[in-house]
Image (cartoon, rainbow, N blue to C red; front, side, top):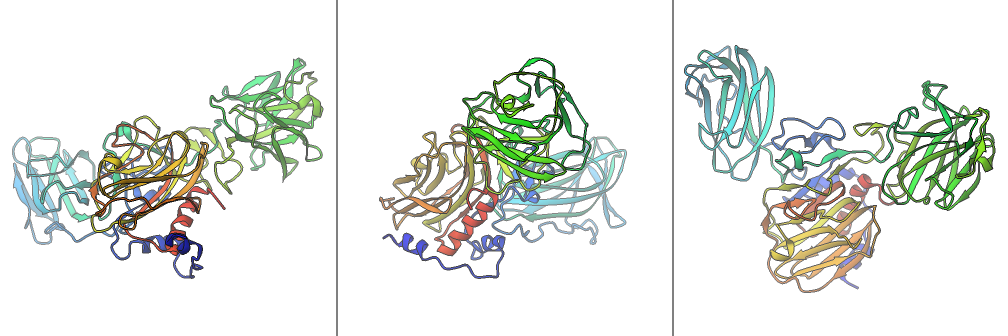
Length: 576
């Protein structure tokens, strides 16, 4: 038995004390190199790569995600006299007259344009957080820039800034950077006052996307339907039924229940919503008897599966190629659902005056009979364990997020993120944890432009053959894979590698599925950027979900491996 197998089989029971997040923080307590990204922590998400606009709601783009592995503890202050308590010391005027008025730096343009600047000692490749208070403007807004000289704005620039506190980040490219404070727009006499100028290093390996069109979005959505509480909307097709909105008290206590009335026509009596892609899905709807007692849920045909529900007795009357369930939620309402089959993404709600009438493709002549419905849900069967059964969705950006896993959602065509180079050269050992939902193939992450062509690299790759791969390359590339796991599928993945020890191990949902002792060659891991959701931002784009990612440049104990898996699984809800 390999040493790693013995280690994991004899793992100790975790001791009480540290919280789960505290255990992840402790993975980096000895200065271990790596990353820790948690999409559920909105304080780490920004819509732009400079970090000027926070992510505040679902379906917004993510241009910057901060790395939690260093605790987001800022470094020492780089600005000299940022509160101007020592006059204008440290600041130089360019095309302006600067003075201190009431402990504020006042900049008055003396020519066409003018500003105050200060030189900062920086480290190339490091990210810095800046904060500036604009306290008053006179005929002008403010502009703030950072560059590699006192007249350069290449690292960051923002114009037309109103009064208030303005915060942003930049990545230094040289050992010296310059910050510029300027009235905006141009013109002699333009005046702006500044205060509390601060520039501090923001340690960590933050990932970013500088092109807005290539930014993935943050999402919490699992229900594929829209207008889930408004069956009168055109997105719902009506066959031989009349829909009357706001006709009763819904399960949530609002007067938003929909009344379905079967028309005096021979045929199926139903409402449905169609989507394009086939697969195995769970369907659900709240229903209550009116003058009719029966509904069924299906994708549209008998052969694809259905379940018929009796709303008077609260029972599943019949089912075929589907597992039906009915649960009382009070006041005559039931949550009716099917799991597994039927195939296809159509969500069809049939009503009937008898159980036979409610079976899809059976027809009858309506007589004005009624049932109440509210709150429809359609999602893949393996979306996650313990999620709320129903998610309200009004539009693609307006839906309920409470209780649902948060993820970053690349689109599979052009969206990706990356880091600056991460220096793993002090170690030849690596442990990684990744929460992923694979819809189609694509890269979860890859160190360097291509792992197999660069020494000291590793990757996590959900490949098109429906397998997961973890690979490591000292001077020889070795990878292992899971068995085929048909997408869509949510999983918690763990990769363990040791170049000198010739270990490459992959674990899926807390279970080892593959390991190799093939020769990885020599050396340590290298100093490369990491690409997420693509290979070098050009190919192998991931269409899926990223629930969280951790990499630790060190060997990890069984307890640490368990902590990482438990933490990521708390985000994916992949296994119990």
